[in-house]
Length: 448
Image 1 (cartoon, rainbow, N blue to C red):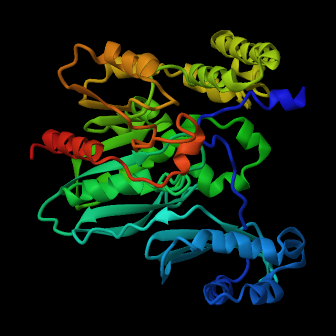
Image 2: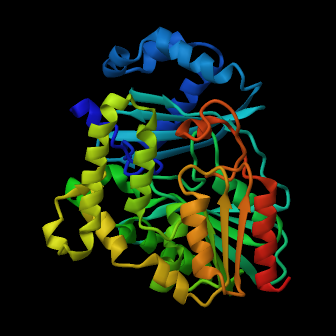
């Protein structure tokens, strides 16, 4: 039964996956990290294991496994260029985390190293290689803090055109579900970085930031997780991001827009109504349907490949979750505080039920751009994009565009794994036509 129940999954990307975090002396950890990288680049992996692995890590990661993983990542990466970035952060009282990006001619290789209080490695993780893209000469970037002084400060990046003659229009980027970083990194793909660089090249500033569950998820108590809603997870920080832009003298506060992807697109009208007060919104791969309904569809689709003898039992499990979801409307909040639906806290869905996306969108009197990839298997042309059309059909300030052969990330992919999460493992960039449509729509709104 347990094995079968594992099929009842939430395909919605990475929801509530929490990242381990840590703390020690930042200077020593940075120095040690650079030493380890130097040894690895020179092929001295045995020395790294001998001198820097804790006993705990040695027991879980052998030298041969370490060598195999390392060479599997770098063999196609080209020539080593150097350390592109190295950030050390304290997590808890006994650990320190070093987030490193190694630049090769073909790829950027992300590495996460966790050190204990003795400056020894207790965890070593190599992420998926990322296509090496160099920031355009016509833009520059600044590090910012979203919610500075609050309990949930978030790191962010503000991308600006190099030539600013007057107040500049701006956009904030709001992530989909799950603990995404500021680039909305999914395997080796960084769609938010693609958007930020392209839009900024055309004279519009872009703010992207790490999501609250990405930065603080590992420090949240189980009670906090059980009571978490999209208000805390997404809405509050998006409003703070908008306020940060509007307080920046270089930004035209009357021309601040929001681009929401996936869940971020679903929530864009709510963020606007709750205090974002944007000049217009762009919804990428969103949906006006309830999130639980989308998850239900995804689960039903996922069991089609299961042996027919098991399907009926799986369907029964999924339908049980569906029934719980449909009864949310009448349930008092206190009665569902410990319940789950499709593996997520019931309060998460209840909160979204209390803020009708369709109504908020219908009442919105601002320009709207809705974009949809026609090969998106997470939200569909038939159920989701079509509903946006119905809601916005008579609106002169609404534009809806779909793109053949593009997926949920607005990237092109054909081959084995298409229509599954596996297609996101293929390195790519956001399609040029999508980027051009975003830029042209924004420029039209600001009057350029």
